[in-house]
Image (cartoon, rainbow, N blue to C red; front, side, top):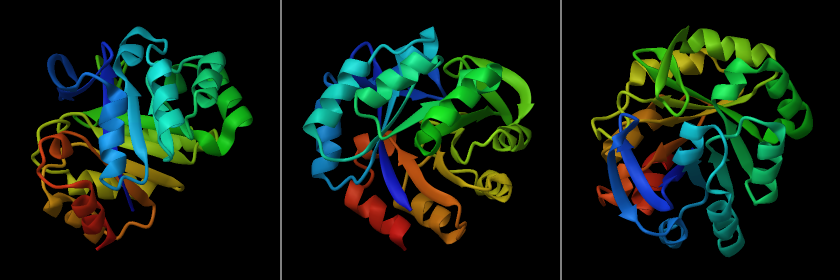
Length: 241
């Protein structure tokens, strides 16, 4: 499994939210590139970058930051936030993203999802973000009545094989993952998925690794790294077992 340090961008800064609340924002750096550089220097093998402004408004706002990060740093980056049209997805890939993360539009626009999968297949990931077990959309500001497992099944029927699963209720809380929820998602996903939400200690990563789910490919960590609860190297070692 791979540890993915998270760089969430809002108003040009590297920030973290609590439970997806845009009013509960902590700024950890004035320059997303420098935040990314710090994680790479600490040993990160992959980066998870989210354009929060894009997620909330529906169109990318931070592609120039993505381009700076991918130009300066020699690690792959998965990028999401506001990618709701084929040109936006193409622009993110041209800016250097190794993988793009689709959210709201993947559920609301079947033709868009089919077009992206046809054009960029293996470089496409879909984010399944949940509150209370139901999928949240529009930058986590709206909660649907769609359960995560049903959504994953539907997306897989259209050809999606890569997911990011986020427990928004735990995001930024540092209280640990819901291991039962991870098991349920693992039982449904036929491809690969990355988990995000609530990681606060190395032991949380060890617990996820101990699940031994072959389709769990990595864990996204943000606040715990920024607050130095453990280092990138320590986190990766925990996932390595």
